Length: 212
Length: 227
Image (tube, rainbow over all chains, first blue to last red; front, side, top):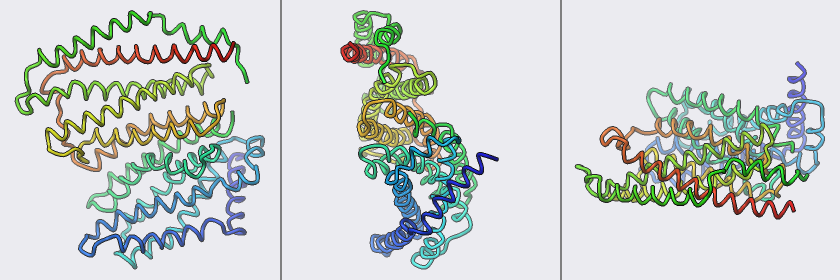
């Protein structure tokens, strides 16, 4: 119960901060719509709907990257990390809470992105929405983890995409697979497996990222 | 945070008791033997002809690269688990070797693809695509490592990232398998693994020799640093 209370307090802090400062979410919304417009002009008119499906996933990953890059900025600028690490709570709670916050931002961004995609390109079916939600869990879990790693390095914003994209390739494969094939069961199951495996590793290893 | 010097060195040194000249000699003999086998003993492949011989390099190097990544992850685990001094350095050395062999896998695979299928790069070649993903992943490892000041935090970050690799390899393999139908030639069943096995031994030994030498040099640096 104590652990859950910690997670809730930390996630509430992030959501409250975003509600007051509005740093991240408007940027993500604007970015994802701009990306769709760019994609429209980079697709020749003769290309199929399947190609647009792939672009939806590229847009999601890059939008997520934008949000993840901002995720630990308050902690870095206000030196909150030291306080969080010194607090008498499990360190993995920091990761869980931050993942919940980034997941919320990404899901809200997609709440706009998917209808806009449907408007600009073609309709989105239930399978794609399920795949997007499953992928969001993996993207935010792993992305928050490597975001915490990148924020303590000298390169910071430069390093996050480099660390994250190789890890996101399986998500992209699962997501695109689920939204283009007729029998998406295997791809959804794969996304679930990815989420479970990486959540376990991140949860167990986060302690080592924030402590010495 | 300085750890006691002499204990560190002997603790690491004890694992490499085989003298380096013996290793070097053994690897020279094995590599020469393997080259002789590949070029003079093995018959030409019925379908692919002479070019198929690159298989003996390509596959052995791929296995060696996997072994290096596994060793790097194992040392990373040892670092996080027991805080063994030197485990971080060993993990880094193993991954560095793995990246070198990984690049060789990409190059030899690319040559093989060009000769067999007429293209330098084939996205339908699962192993090659997997190695590209791994190469990107471990190249980012270097970016991470050299973007943090040396110390316990860097060791932790690198160790955690190296452990991610263990999860990423099977997950990516599964993902790439899912993403396309499997057309990589299954060479092992047609030819038997005899000569490949020999090459493997040769590579492992030359590998051991290489990393042994490197470690020796690094240890000398360490010793100087601790003195």
